[in-house]
Length: 330
Image 1 (cartoon, rainbow, N blue to C red):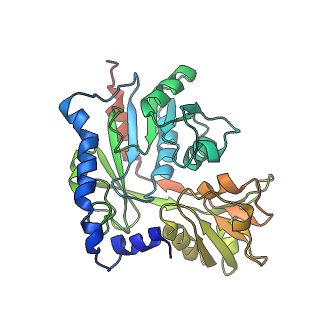
Image 2 (tube, rainbow, N blue to C red):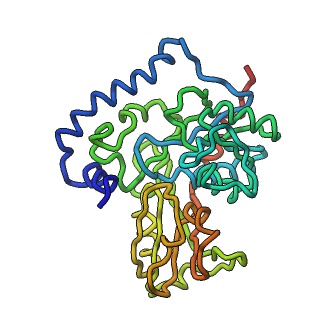
């Protein structure tokens, strides 16, 4: 069991957080306060872009379903007449400056999530530590009238017009403690200042928008792109690969489809090699689309990705559309 798995047991399980982790919480609070101080004092101001910016993020460490929501929101904005683009930190990539994605962009350089979003939506995507600079690059190159920021709820340097916090409906906020004693990047009071709270799975609570992830097909990683219903794997033994923030969610979805899986959980943003997909037998391999963008070059013939769609009420997308409809350049 690695460190991340041990921490997850403490944060989301029954084990109490040890004293040495709780003792580090004041240090985390201090670092967070130092990060926020220039903006609170007015010495620094968030940079505004000439189009509305919608930030999708979370207040916990690990995956909550942000990327599928980004994809769904891009499609919903298009359906409502907008021309959205996407900006991202490009976490896990090695790019040192802002960069536009194209069809040949390497996930190792620009990050797996931006490549996935670009491939799934065809929307223009720019990555960079400086999100405002990424946004300006995107606007200079494409006729976008709205930007969706993948992650960035804690990125104070970019002014946002709409804040969306995604909550893991199963794990919620774990033990409710700040890092490193718990999974919280920010106190729970941060939820009071966001525009929308989206609950991915589990039981939706008051004031939250329900979301669920649906995956019904498997797509071959080979060039043919063959598809088959996920139910075709029911009753079969397969290797399930997931290098995402919460692999258990992917594994549970496959089990829910009646598939007999052997779990292979990797760290979020894991840099795969061919050996990671060799398990000494001829059983099929099912993986997330986020993993697939890094494995396609060396995947064998029986490797499949399972795309998921975020299902949300149309009223949620209408509400976001209404929020940005009155945007005025400043």
